[in-house]
Amino acid sequence: MVAVAVTITAVSPTTDTFLTVWNPDRAMPETSTVNVSDGGVRANAAIVEVSDSGEIAVFNSTGDVDVLIDVTGTFTGTFRAVPPWRAVDTRQTEQVSPETSISVDVVGADVGPSAAAVVVNVTAVNAFEPTFLTVWGTGERPDTSNLNVSDGAAVANMAVVAIDDRGEIEVFNSSGDVDVLIDVLGYLEPGTGYRRFGPHRKLDTRQPSCPLAFGPGETRRVNLHVGASEAVALNVTAVDASEPTYLTVWPAGAPQPDMSTVNVSDGSATPNFTMVGTGWANQVDIYNSSGNVHVLVDVFGVVDGEHHPGTVAWCPQPPKHVDTTGKDEGPKKDHDGKDHDGKDHDGKDHTGKDEGPKKDHDGKDHDQKK
Image (tube, rainbow, N blue to C red; front, side, top):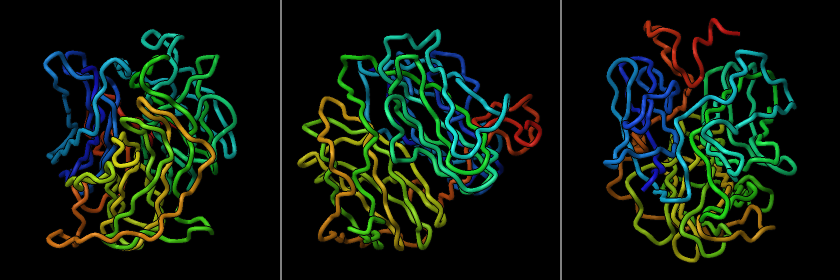
């Protein structure tokens, strides 16, 4: 085993903090994986290289915090983990303007020119107004988003992005000025089991043809329109939630796991990237805990499978309700559950604790760097 796909959740910290996750056989990287505010809950997906003994390390910057780690998949020869490194930090240059794209060179000492795609953590910070970022590699910009930002706090999400012929990826900013940070976590080699395409939107419950939000305690089975495959790489986004909730995504037909994939505190768009095994007929099940919420699902790639293009915004009919007896429907269980407001991946040391220039994922010292 080379690496694992995990969802890391920080719960109820006693002060603002950040977590860094890495292979303990290597030096701790100058990046963060999850940033969380005092008393909040925050989750992020990551693909992490494991040590020779099959372990990963978790570092907490400040205060006390509960940590949850859910393993969603493993990689053998397909994924090549590298010591995380920062490919771009626009706080050191200038912010990305609205309706503008920037090119980011992601081929370096650890990512060779033969890489087909890179796994990156994308962070937006210091946004002047609500916006979204789209990250892609080749062809026209897809009609999807990787990161949704509601205010100036730092927000991050993981993505698998194809590399173009120049060894670059593109990042598009929709509205206002915003700083962008890209951290490279690893890469995928050509000819391996992972096939990257799109991204392609497979579910959007806001579409006029399917204006049907998920209700409380509701599970729907979603056809991703991929061929026979072991797993899919998905970006799952919750939008316009009527109250705090969480979503769980798992292989169709399997027992629902006691975990969450996306945690939502308000109506703002909240995404999370995940690797999910495909279940019956290459589908996945999606569960919503509380209130009403719209759900978007974008497929980025498959492991040992193929994509059937042209199918977008599949409308489930009828929705399937599940028995939620015995589940705490109060403050949602979620991944920590409860109240994943997603406040930021900015983190590093919002506390002001003197740790030298903060490591950030958001980067550092937003208040002084501009």
